[in-house]
Length: 75
Image (cartoon, rainbow, N blue to C red):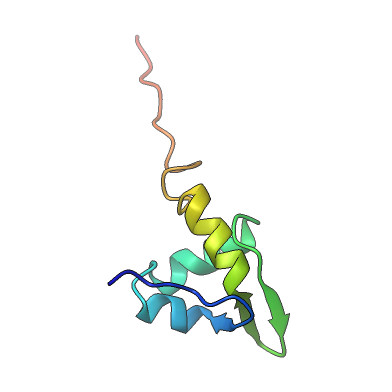
């Protein structure tokens, strides 16, 4: 069964990684890039269930703004 974030609950990056959303480093990149909303509480990021749902409905970000292909230079 797919991960279903609960409204009103907060999750850590590790919670999301364990749920199979993505790896820890990828989730951190999404937060730092502003794609996934999160609050810094002490030294840990906390992500609300509502923000996770919104993010998942928009797409994980892996497809949005993913790796850019380099144009080949012709000589």
